[in-house]
Image (cartoon, rainbow, N blue to C red; front, side, top):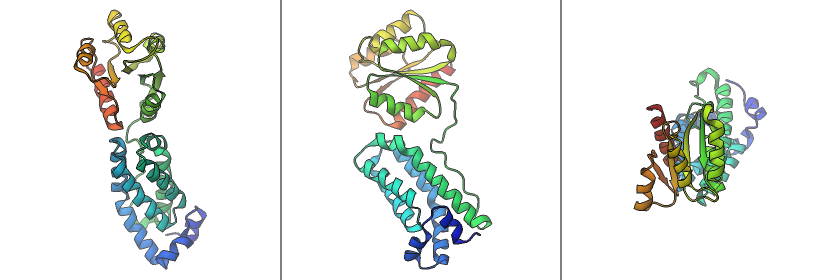
Length: 263
């Protein structure tokens, strides 16, 4: 086990923490208790992020903030506080956009603690912020005229896939025609767009027999029976209705790609 100077050298504010704990023995024992439950806490944070449950997400990051303050993890406390404030505003876009930053700092802190305790504690697994394998050789295409939607979905999948985006159906068709040999494994397509709308893209797919090569699922705010019947007449895989959360879009994309694998 290393001395407290090791923690101080790694930007852990031990002196501030000792104002609460009094001595290093109590600090160390309580820190070990923290380590026993941090894994389950991170799993809960991940779950609430994926289902866009910002109320429970705020509760979890609030607890993380408080514990981090107690132990002198000042940077982690500050990041957790930002997540708490934004999730209370129901700002899931901030949470998704800055989630990796939060997880990176947690990993940094856990690595320091592991080295500090040494053989006194079991090895701490590194937290994967996405819990997914990188598959960057596979490409997905997001077609939507909403910059917010494009950025939100792109951020979710940017570590797992090569993500291409298009704000119009016209640009989507240009990308498709230029990338047919680069393995586009799925398209998430909005319906209401300028220039060339989603139905015109579907018409192009049908006329050129592309559905057997590139599976398509729809993302739309129109959930009427007429629209659904018309969409499924083309042979699309699924429809994702706006507003959607991270878990929903992951499920639809997985289903779309699985459809492609069965062809």
